[in-house]
Image (cartoon, rainbow, N blue to C red; front, side, top):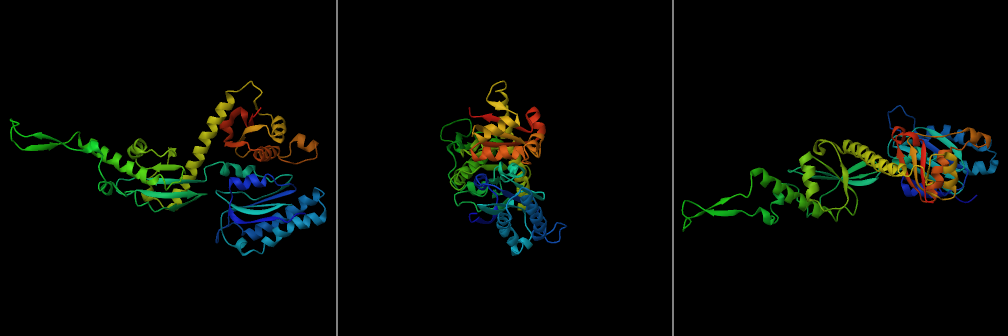
Length: 379
């Protein structure tokens, strides 16, 4: 047995998943619910003891040699003594195989589970990994704008770049656009040598809209380099969001907005809204892709048959794989007949990811007749 690749505890990412899908079996997947001091949930170390017993029994039942079982379990047993396992934190997942030993935190809740199989059990985590994991949030307000960075379920305030005005008044210190210049007209009945008076080019509301447009143009220009190509989600009054979209040239504005006034919310409340928004955007993208799949109905390019999809996944022929959230085949009749309790959906997902397929997760009611699985083949 090769030495295990040990990875420090960090947030679970898509790149981590792709590497794990390459791992040879037997593979042990242990999910531990979040633990917080004073809460009713048990510390990780206590949860892990029960998972270790289950994993060892499963390995022996699969007739894995005793010495290989002990080698696989050794680093997991050592985790029970790790001080980090007694400290509160997010939901955790542990992966162990002959070539890998990793533990990760997860955005969002996770249920307790221990699975032993040919592949790591990844389906329960795909809905979090298929969403946008990192983006920026801009809270729009004429008196004070607020910039935050969202990363894996957490939000942090970000200092505005020096080139970004913090409010409309500060934006007035910059050069005003040409269309805001004032016109002048002669006063009185005669235009001889009489003095002139100023008049505006539009109503006060129009002038306010022009100032707001100018302000948001400067904000957009000042943020473009700082955002480094990451998606930007807007939040604010409807007219402010609409005005910013008209003024902005940044190509990575999110089509969805974040509800609520960010200036009255804590970073924890904003993070919750951001997570929900990311899920909605992911579902919207998946629905569009599913519609494209449905347009190919009647051709050989698509299928909802788990056997056909499984074979195509093993051959590397799947371009896009759609799964219903929460769906698992478990020990189907076919799996039992072949003396295997492998989850067929998970197997199809692992092999598809291994071969570079795009993954999409949707609620079962959205997938409709295609649930719980559908695939678009490369050929």
